[in-house]
Image 1 (cartoon, rainbow over the protein chains, first blue to last red):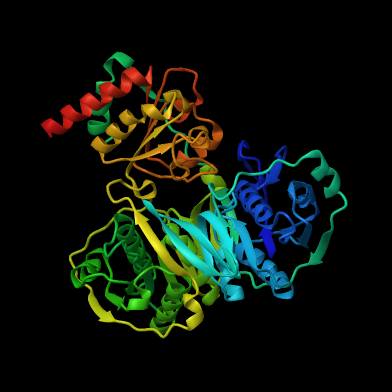
Image 2 (image 1 turned 135 degrees about the vertical axis):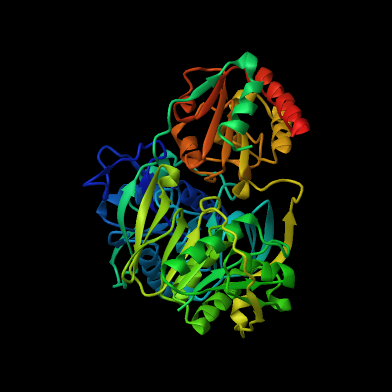
Length: 245
Length: 325
């Protein structure tokens, strides 16, 4: 089984987000970039599914040369080879178009993405890829098993879950529950240096959207403290003052 | 060129988040001087369908056939895109629900449309360009996305736009689309819904617990408070990682982002990753015994105290308030 895992390079979860150039650029100064946590789950599951010579895992990233540390990390965790599409990931449509191009030339049985990247939270690449390749896609899954030529996935729905059986090939966006992220061991880190990381050029894509600015949430006023002995008063405040109950 | 709104149903019913999305789509139709067409797929009764008019739908397309009874992302996307083409609609609005997140990108590709997911306010319109504010960095910021394509898809974050009622009824007409066979490759085997609980993404009130609660056996009071308030329960990452609560309750940067009217955090210190997921809550209440807990800095109301003493008092007070109301 050949699995393609789409990975993105995102600011570490502890990053304080700030902007520059009149709030039009994300301030990357001093920011540590990591492998998107949901993609780590996708990668871990892909490795589990192909363990013992049952297949191969290729990771693909759309990014400039500075994402290679993250790609090497994915190789250290256990991907067999990697592809970097040498371009700035303009938006989900751009990224999906690049991955689709690569996937058309290299048949995969399964394509995994994280449920979303923790920078723009779009959850769009999986669906767009599905449409571009005309195969099924499931956006947010909590469980994934493969049996022969079909997969069983558990999809999250509001207040419940849905179990689907889907013939390969398909695309799924993984969330917590699918697998535990794997930590690279020393052998993995050593071998990652020599695993293939192919750099390919991007295809041209029509621009459909553009990020034009950012803002941070408005700061809240001073917290109003209620004494622990008079906790009941809080309920009154929430009713009469905040008007939320 | 009308606006098209997809009104997702859950077991034949529309939820509040859908009425929000219809109201939002109506406002866009007003901004662009056009009409609003709703499309419903699945088994929804006529009363429910015509009630969409109350929120601003001029016309409702009803797609009801056995094959489309349950949500299959590929097939539904085909139907919605076909409706957009037939109605000549260049703007498609839907809710940024779990299903909406699967649909929006597929519809976007079919219509060669820019997609603004997680929208939190009405677009600013300049000529043919829409600037839409959306959540980014998992709630730590907002980004403005400019949709420059002729067709546009906007997925609205639940609980970010008010329901607006109008005294009008929409006309309902049947709509049929021939789906291609390959739209139905994914087969639904089972749907499990816990109908007795409020679902976290839809909840207007969320009661959330952290490590300060010491163990899963202490969640009884969290659930009791949540039940009394008609709230959903949630938790912090360490709690779901420890297996005290299911992953689906994990709120935060790598869990789900919520935007309820009221978020009550009990025994959660407020790590930056957790705060990211709750920052769009309208009112935040923090109960923590550590006065230095960072969560107090972003809270509207706080109680410095032991959860095991404070929560029972709150439960008693809510019971009293409900009895008098």
